[in-house]
Length: 95
Image 1 (cartoon, rainbow, N blue to C red):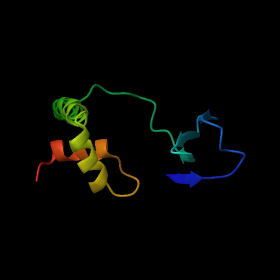
Image 2 (cartoon, rainbow, N blue to C red):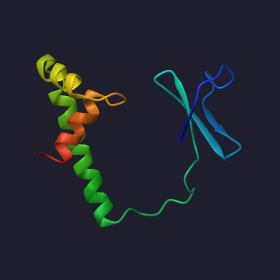
Image 3 (cartoon, rainbow, N blue to C red):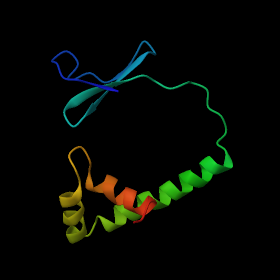
Image 4 (cartoon, helix red, strand yellow):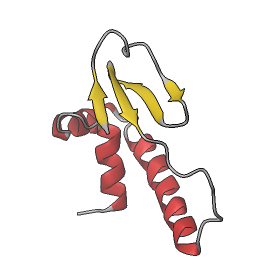
């Protein structure tokens, strides 16, 4: 993944020629290569992980509605990370 920051790509987003995807994130354009097109049925392990992730996502969203908890997570989050990312990580891998 690379970061682009010029006037030409600043307002562009989408897929170009099925080879490159441009996304805008926090004022920067990020270029990624798309993954394979074929989708297979997820394995039992993948399905279990997705369920665990969905539960953690709901939990993180819920706890961050409390202004005090949100402020604590924002203070703890490093550059490039959000309070939500940190709360999600805490839910998935408690200390």
